[in-house]
Length: 196
Image 1 (cartoon, rainbow, N blue to C red):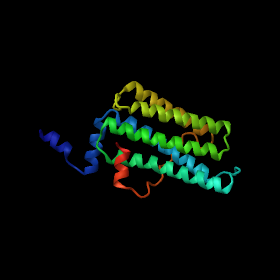
Image 2 (tube, helix red, strand yellow):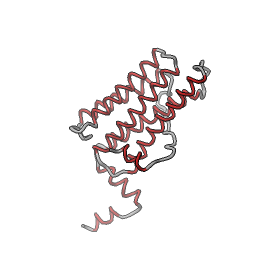
Image 3 (cartoon, one colour):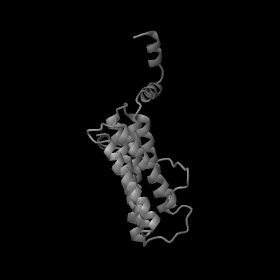
């Protein structure tokens, strides 16, 4: 190993990990898609919690279940981000994290639709979220291994459409990027499954 390469390998572990992350041309795409999906899930949860809204709420028992499921979905999306952040770059595994975040965001969107009593815009946002999850899943299938440029581009486009639909539904403000929720209690086994 040359001195230059040795110097590049020195430093903090986080700096080394950041260096390794930039070497993978697909990781940035998977990470951006996963973060966007986690942001959508967090936005739906915030909407359901009723922060900053005066909308009529569902019956209390129904709302409690919707809130519980939305919170769970937002947490699963956040856990997918945590796994991605803590793992070595691997296009196949990274794409599965993005898929998991998108799937969780679609579940949160379903709760958003229920919360909004099936309004047309909420239904459209849910449909767009499902399509984003499906496209992200297609990019992560065994044959693609997270490295198919066409499938990744389609997944990125579907995620952008889901964001626009969530904005139209009033779940998130245009251009807003909401931080993922706290991951909560993290089981090693569950976290490993997030990256399977």
